[in-house]
Length: 305
Image (cartoon, rainbow, N blue to C red; front, side):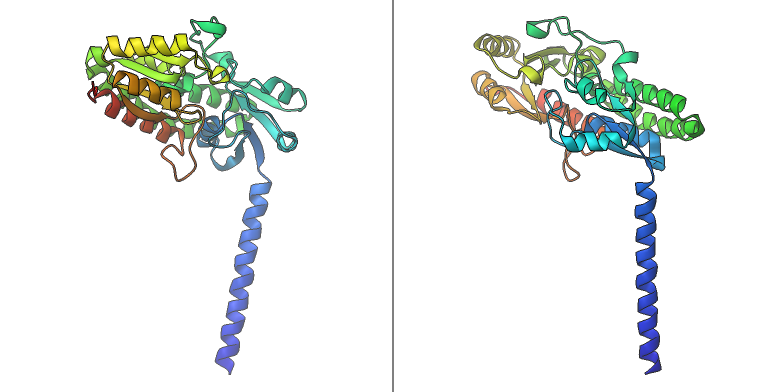
């Protein structure tokens, strides 16, 4: 009988200890200062730099289109609890100005510290291409910008930010080397990156690729007969082995290009959003690696015609 009572008391004590630990952890998490980002890729970057000192969240969820996102009342509630909002800029977040105007929060815009590549045609001609993070080389600049600005705003955590950033940049440098090794050794005639959205200008510039696309930005994701014809002719004339699309838009138009030209459809690259945790691009580093692997497989393939 005594043994049963002892076991019962031990179980009760264990339960209350476990409950106390959970309550304590929840309390610690809820007491952390909140940094809000505009999209999931920035969320992952900032979290890797800020570490566990802050709670980092994204306004947009995984798989969502960023350009034309419409904020909700719950977004404003989340924003009211944040001490900082981190955005890409360059016109990526068409909604951010109105969103920020309703909040009393500090702001970091990556575009304030980064030299853009400009879109060269159509309605967006002369406007900055916002997708600089798609190039690992530019990704490292993002890390530098975020680290510097966070350190300025929170100098007491500067040492932690810089240590985290150094480790993170080392991983980015390895991916940068992998991109360079593959693309520098790729046959010149295969150095074309054909996508749905013109989101790869920085990657193309940094690694010596020629870029072609069906539309300049996803906010204008309407394919015209003229654009379709131009891309089809380019793929045929240059025997481009593969064409690609992006994870947040329909690949139907690009599949038509593949059927018409005999090129391989190389799959969906990740651009504006991470995947969910079970997907191939659940972090920024995974996104870059996934894109590189698709490019390797696609650009090394042989046209079917």
